Image (cartoon, rainbow, N blue to C red; front, side, top):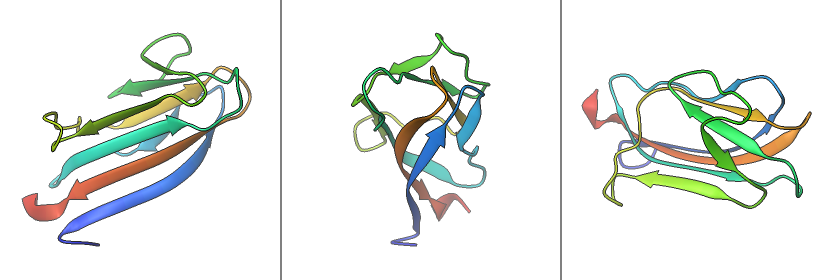
Amino acid sequence: MVDNKIINDTAKTIATTSTMISEAVYNATRVAFMVKNISLAGEVIYLAIGKEAIIGQGIQLQQGDYIFFSRDGGYTPSQDRINAIASVATANLAIHEEIDLAAI
């Protein structure tokens, strides 16, 4: 924990079933969230916020694509769970998340 924040940096392998990559945040605030598709070319990942991920729907990340939400950037990320699903049997994500515990 740094300055009353939890910082999570991880990588996850995603398959063709919806997988939770970040739990819902309660009694705290997610202040930054970044996810990058670090898979090989052709492996597409879809993200869903607050619901199950479905192939072909939601936020689409091609190989090398990323999405970044930050309170410092003027947008407080959703506090809901975040799920991912891959278009192939295995795809890889790099995830960075910061959670501010000041709300506790």
